[in-house]
Length: 302
Image: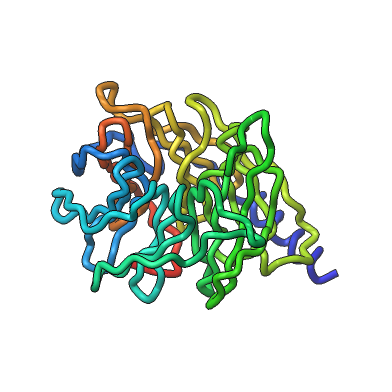
């Protein structure tokens, strides 16, 4: 009964949410170029010094961006696809060929955190997000697609490098975000133009089951994702040169588009100090747009 009462209370709050438009968030949503790295960029993050970090999928590079200038700090020896900072300062990296890695910016050391799921090789690890206790969610599309629903969402409990499968039979799970209370996980299904909401590994008894939260438009499908402090979902809409945004009730507000001469391979995004930053992979550029909101508090807060 308590769970049902909490669910009804949440629905009531959603029902009183004010009307919103994309203009409320980013005005005319004009992007400015922040950096040109010349890499197939993914996994943008910020550290406590205000430096941006990203990875180069094709080159294996771990890239630090200082004052708009890109420098390669290390190579993973594989194909890094996503990155998130841990609270201890290490950068966790998903690598298509090597699984989940850690990179220590203080020593440049790279180690394998995990490369197997139930004793089998982890194939095409894609993106990742930490919950509020330091547990780690990773999307693993493997060879999945619109026609092949074999992708997985896995979870590593705090302090553990053993993967637990949270959801499977997914059509190319790609970007991943988590609700502020860590009770539900948002997963972008790149192979189905859908963002689904799934009960987290730490919320097994909830009456709120997995459901399709957002249907995306344009491009191929949702890539990297983020949430703001008010609960909106943002996603890089790959092959459309745009970011999609929902309101706090889950309705799609619209798409903030890069300039016409920018590339269309929009891959990942991150909030930092009044801006939303976006990686575009075909030209290896980082763009940003001024926003009126802040990003959701992260396990690692820059």
